[in-house]
Length: 526
Figure (cartoon, rainbow, N blue to C red):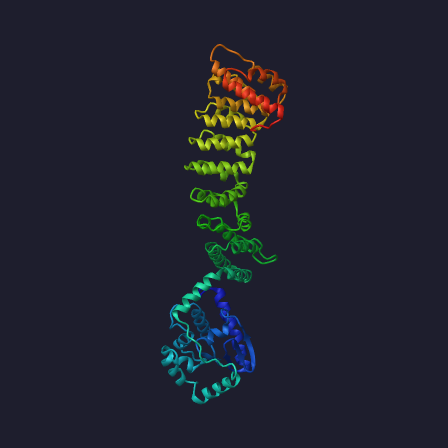
């Protein structure tokens, strides 16, 4: 984890040496014997594990080490080299890089070891090293006989001398297994990192947070969002009463900044697009721990995602984050991609904050029809300064679909000012020449203002007659009949009965439908 010049590293070595040196001075040589699942000191088992993976005894036993002796005179440098050697062996990449080779290469003066000859004969790689070591100082023949005699007596019933060496294929499989099992180790690593952080000194906070950032990135890269949330939770709560709390908090802020950075958000987007749908609950937990600074990063990937499900996740995230900073979210309205702008407007609709109206009004003239349509949908759900003038202006849009959406938005508002705009539009000079469906849309929303005034207006249109533009006038009357049917206006039945046999088929048909709806109390659309 740490380079050799790191204070935490140096303090760890010093602490280990102090303990070892104290033992050697008081009790003499430290002589450890290794079995497959145990380490023995004298006649006592001081370490035991049945775990096939996390087993410190087996770590030595698998390479043939049967005894390890630390002698008086051991130096801090020797102990540091020994610890580096066994740490390196945990990450071996080649077959020859076993613990025996690493110990032999260092030729320790005060650290001696005994290896199993049967094990060595299975692999010629170790033979020369074993012979040289057996002839080396301190490993004389009587001493070896004594050691083996003791081991054979102790392990008479369970002695397993034939331990298969670890092959390259075994190592590859082990690496795959560690990769699969890596997620379960992250919580433990998180705990270690924060233990280091809380006991670190003034100059070590930055180094420890750098490691937290690396662990955080790894958790996102492997899809372990739960561990990432755990890191952020721990970082949000420095220990009470600790020294340098302000400095600790300042360093931990870097972790939250990294969690909101484009790099991390891009990684999230890639995993979402690849089909990895994080649990909704844990994804929401993650987003809730982010700062509003993450808004630009989420907007950026919103335009890159290719799957609907991924976009839904990011949109929901922006609904939460954008509510913290509407102005940051509004910057997405300037994006050159129409679909990003439309999604931002949709997010504004879900936020339902009237503060977004000023941004929507500015986007009402967007060049893309689909964007203008989404703006009008938002206007229909929000009331505030600028909405009515924008909707009134949209009634003159060159696109019929936009004009009709503006009418529907006004109808949803159900306010008197909105009603006046609709009535003014119906009474305007060019209204009669509009397409039938567009005229019908105006009359349909009139049903959102039930009452005598509306019914009287519709009946007046229903009775309209003219020698000019008879077809267009009939369309107006048909629209009025349709609206009266929606309102269930029984006062219109007499006039509708007269028109159900009208020569104009459209007027006749809509009058008949209105009668049925009024008589049977059918709802609009039936």
